[in-house]
Image (cartoon, rainbow, N blue to C red; front, side, top):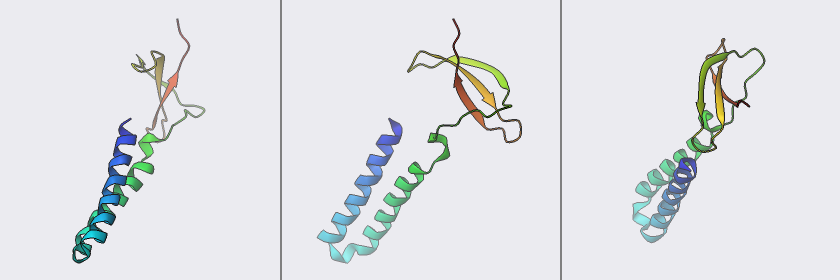
Length: 95
């Protein structure tokens, strides 16, 4: 939900920059900076590693952390890559 909101805001910034450049042609430096900012917001959100699903690889030991995901109500276990410290959240089937 937050990602969609940030992408929407970035798209609105880009649209505002285009509108400003068309309505007030003398303000093109400001609209160029505004458009660049909007592009950076959108690109940064699309390429952010945190939003990509991470899968636990073979040999990733469990950290002992478990919690119930508040949105799905499912039990989640945290696993970590010993080499990089990357964490993955794995749904487990437990009573």
